[in-house]
Length: 408
Image 1 (tube, one colour):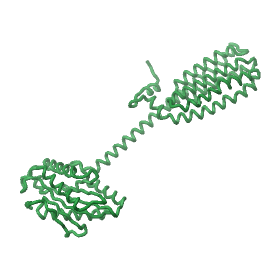
Image 2 (tube, rainbow, N blue to C red; image 1 turned 135 degrees about the horizontal axis):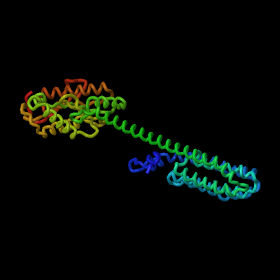
Image 3 (tube, helix red, strand yellow; image 1 turned 60 degrees about the horizontal axis):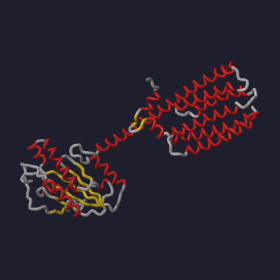
Image 4 (cartoon, rainbow, N blue to C red; image 1 turned 30 degrees about the horizontal axis):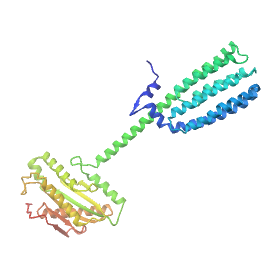
């Protein structure tokens, strides 16, 4: 069975809801605001026509006042009260359509009581109800279609009972009424279909925007991640440094730990680059497991890693304990390394703790940690060294790590 494109689109699914349901929910407030304004204007227009009734057809003046006032006025107040209920906008539009359709019936009932010859000319005004139900109120097409057909049937059932009505008059009236019905329904359908099409385009654009934002966010995240180890890379470190500069704190203490895998070139030469990559991944995981979630853990170079801990209350002893914990966790991995005296992979760690406010100071801190790392390697590797003053590379303190005397 053929179904117009408008109905096909309404019946499609958008997640757990149909297009019709989501369309009504998303545009509820906008459509309700317009509906209230149009209802107000149409009510003023309709009740002001009581004066036109009295002027053109004095014999139905009382009938017009009673029917408009006792029937339509309460219904109008009821309609505005119904707009405040938490029901779908489609039901509120349907309520408005029903009241307008009933107002057309009341208007016909008013005119049927007149014996004035002017009633035949005045009856052409009934076509206004068709325009209201299609191109003024612009309800959903299905509501507009059924209500227009109802009002059309009401008008041309009543027309035979008007004073002075003839077949010629009815045919003459139909020659105008039928085009009005058809053309206004066509206009309403086009408006309904176009409104739905624009809504779906906006939804599609919004979905694409959200997907693009999510992908950009993911790309931004990936761009700061080292693909081998999953740790932050140098670009992420730069962003971290920029954040420190944008939120300076004179009381902030930052600890830098520079970690190097001992004899890694020899490991690569002996076991191959694939095993070298596995080794770096395992070491990176051990470092990450030892650190807090808020610590900056970065792959600083080929086999070098950097840990930055920003804490107002950080102390050298606390950071040294962390560095020693990392060293021990790497040894516990027991990764074989035959070319070395220990016969397993070890690391050397250089540590420095200082107050840092700017990027320059952070660079100095890392340089001091690098000096401590160099001293740890010079002392025999597989140990932690502390540089207590980032501005003085020679002022280094050793943390005992047991009776270790590896080959240089």
